[in-house]
Image (cartoon, rainbow, N blue to C red; front, side, top):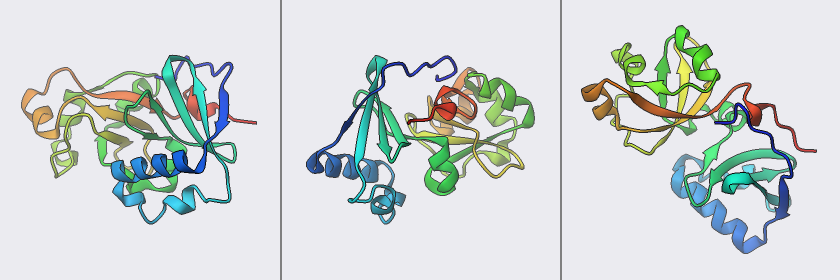
Length: 180
């Protein structure tokens, strides 16, 4: 998604406190695990900015650090840098070592790659349209964030085609982007 992304003309605005509270509430609704951490991530004394880029892409920024991004009114996606700080934030899917390079290049996560290791699929049924982390077996941190195309149960049944849409990976444009 961000492999060829060039953040030219990122327009940043400080959010008013009412909109800030609304954003924080929406993030906690999507990620209940952040309820006790949201004021630590977004302290009142620090300005929360929204950066707007092309294609209705929005970034939520504290002190030049992008914490979340989203398109239009879609789901909030944590950045991988935030996910590395809070690894339990997202459900995790596992892939083998052979999938790492193509996925970091922007490839989609195919169902066959997920079911190849059936014991590594999440135990609970993760619904379609859920933001998830992709990790390589034997590694600690996620290297990709994706959006499920199908539920875990459907991935097991169908086992053909794309299972998770690749959104953000280590070494893509968002990973490398620094705000000054």
